[in-house]
Length: 284
Ligand code: AMP
Image (cartoon, rainbow, N blue to C red; front, side, top):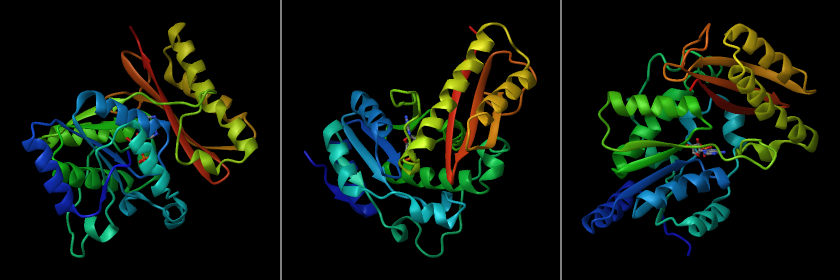
C-alpha cells in the first residue's frame, strides 16, 4: 500500500500524536530520498521495533557545500513512495524548504570535536546542517526511536552526541551498512558512476577489508596501515583521495596505535562523484 505523504509540520504532528494516543511506538527514518536497499534496511529496523513508522524525505540544503551537488542530487519521489510502501511505512513527511527553514531562522546546532577530521574539513558547515535538520526533525516528530546508517559513521556519531548532549527524547539507533553484491556500499550517488568508475569503486570496501585483516593479524601501527590504505586506493585508476584515515571510533580523533575501538574511514572521488565508506577495526 502506498503510504500517505504530508508536507506540513502541523499535519505530521497531529498524525503522530494520534498514533501515540493509540498506544503506538513511533519510529523515525530521516532520509534525503532517492531511496535504495540501505534506506529500506533502516525502515525495516524501525518496523521491527515500532508500530508507526515515519520516513522523512527532505533534501536538506543546509548540509550541501556545493550548489552543484545540491542541484544534481537525485529526486525520485514516486519510486521512493513505492519502496516505502513495500517495506512498511505509515507516513512520509516531505516538506518544502520553506516549511523547514522559514525566513528569519537564526539557530543552528554545532557538535564540537567530532567534526575536526574525516568529512569535517572538506565539507565545512555540512555537519552543522545535518545536526540542525535532524534536531528539527526530532522536535517535530517526537519519535521514540530514530534510525541512521553506519555507512555515514561520522554523521551517526554526531547525531548520537547531539542527542546525548541536548537530552533528546528520541533514542538513536545505528543500522549496519547495506552493500551491493560486490561490496560497494549502497548510495544515492552510485548512479552517477560510469561503468569503469563503478567497477573501480569496488576497491573501496575491498581495501578496507584488507586493512581489517592486517589489524587482525597483529598490525597496530596506524601510519603503516594508513599508508597501505592510501596507496592501495590510489592504485585504482581514476581515483582521487579526499581522505583515508584511522580514528578512534568514539571521539573520531586520529590514533597512532590501534588499541580498542578504531574506525578506518575513507572518502574517494571517482570523477566528480565522492563516495564514503568505513569499517570498524575492533580488537576483541
Ligand atoms: P541519505 O538519504 O543519503 O541522507 O541517507 C539517509 C539515511 O540512510 C542515513 O542515515 C544514511 O546513513 C542511511 N544510509 C544511506 N546509505 C546506506 C547504506 N548503504 N546502508 C545503510 N544505511 C544507509
